[in-house]
Length: 364
Image (cartoon, rainbow, N blue to C red; front, top):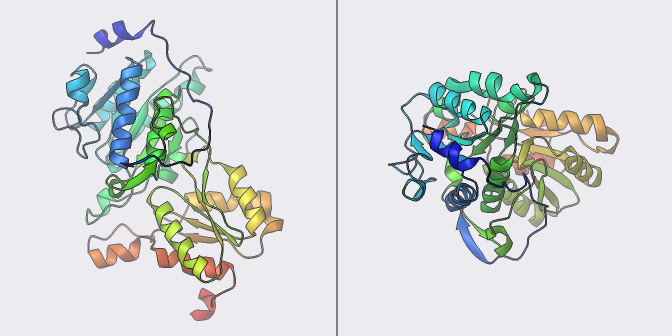
């Protein structure tokens, strides 16, 4: 299956893992997150014959969410491979291909299904570089929608950011905007280590402005670097994926009430940009973390620990954590909304941190 790819691949000059980062501000056009991911895959497959895509319905059906639209026609069945419904099987094949120098992109129809393949992701991919004393690289990307969508029940709504971010050997990325999606996926594919790439189903159709630089084929977002989406001086709000949009909306509401919120788009969950987070907290003296996942042992808990360890003396208020409810995701729409953080939850937390509302304990 991979013989032809390997024959074409070796001897080709491959671009550096990550290009030098620059800031981009001038918006030239708009692009959906779906198109950003599609264009990143297309360009990386065109530039590097070692890159191939594999998963359920990625070829003939052009992807369950149409992320791989047009790629089968352009690159053929040797590089866009439809698989049976066997995550453990095709993930293992992908890891084996990475062992031999190829660069697989493994698509999970939802990251909930990655649990079927977690042995390969953790034991085969994440640990091999360390266990081989650096002799074996595993350049593979595991990508697909993560977290809650709408009305898909507990088995299809789990956020796996904290699960995978707890494992040494993996890099874990969670894009928000089209710029994030395009730049981070390119960085993930070029990286020599296994990358878990957590998308969000509800963001695929969202449109964001992108600059001409972002559309350049050499564009790449550095792994491990957060982005300050909105500057502020009164409270720091950290978020990733869809929650970045919620945090930005909350910041707009807070601004009308005289509270200046700084919103940090984490982008990278592992490695975590602790420097940017702590620098912001040392400026604002307050912290609110936001995530869709469960509160216990979550990404927000790790951020809070980092701030307490490195910037405790700068805090003027207890840290606030906003997370999903500590229950499996309900199916009923009204209960589902209560189980997922909302904009008003972030607003209330920021007000508590700024002593602009009655504390929850006192209200109770």
